[in-house]
Amino acid sequence: MKLLLLLLSGIFVFAGQESPGVAEARRQWDQIRQQVDAGIAPASKLDEAQRAIDDAADEAVLGGTLYGKMRVEDLNPAQAGEMLAAAERRVDRIEQQIEHGNALIASGVVALHFNDELEAELARRTQALALAKDRSALVAGILNMANAEAAESAKVESSGEKPSGEKKAEEFVAGDHGLAPSDIKDITLAYEKKFDKPLPVSARGETAVHRALGFDHTGRIDVALMPDSTEGVWLRRYLESKSIPYYAFRAAIAGKATAAHIHIGPGSTRLRVAD
Image 1 (cartoon, rainbow, N blue to C red):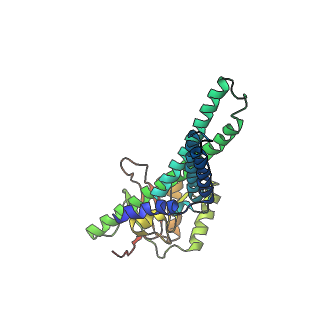
Image 2 (cartoon, rainbow, N blue to C red; image 1 turned 90 degrees about the vertical axis):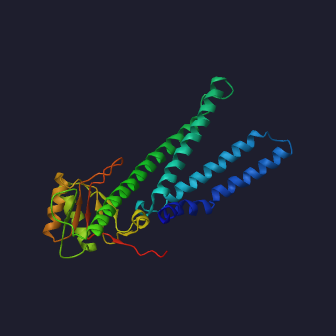
Image 3 (cartoon, rainbow, N blue to C red; image 1 turned 120 degrees about the horizontal axis):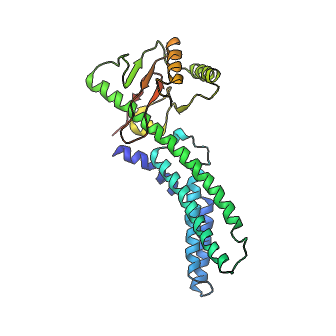
């Protein structure tokens, strides 16, 4: 129950903060309602005004989750889902307007270029939807990886055994120190020098997902690499040479995207949450 409340809290925050765009759309709706009541505007105008309110509300959601300064690590799955849904609704609305405009063009009521601005807006919204899908997928990846780490932690706690160094689904290699910021910088630079591409870090330090699952991920990073891939083997050997502890997760979560990754640093500890 606590997890559900944590995941939904972000949506309630967005819903409780009315953006200037939503406020203006509501003001326009009130003006049109008065005109409809006075008989000087058709009732259909109210439907258009309501769609404008809904569109402004969805734009506000994207402003907080996609366009704003919120890092992907600060998004929980519920917020990522609302972000994606808002982007999809904004595309759907503009497509409906274009479809209506095409009907008007076909009937000769409006000019052939009637939909030009709408088409340009559709392109912008489609691009935003693609970005929302990418960001949502990153959050899902963090969730899958965090679930794998939580499962390993639960297994160790229930068995009372320490992680072994055997090559299996979850492999732990101990080090003689934690993960310092300088270590992260050195690892990143060494990886980029070796493979000429950025280190695919999926979760850097504390994330909303880890908090929701009750784990403190501070001072740890997750890297989206298969442990036995060329890059994964190199990274594990590098970490071992520097005596940096890590977990190599080879398992996937049934019915979900792969959770295979390398967790650099000691295992995440459980947060103390008051009842």
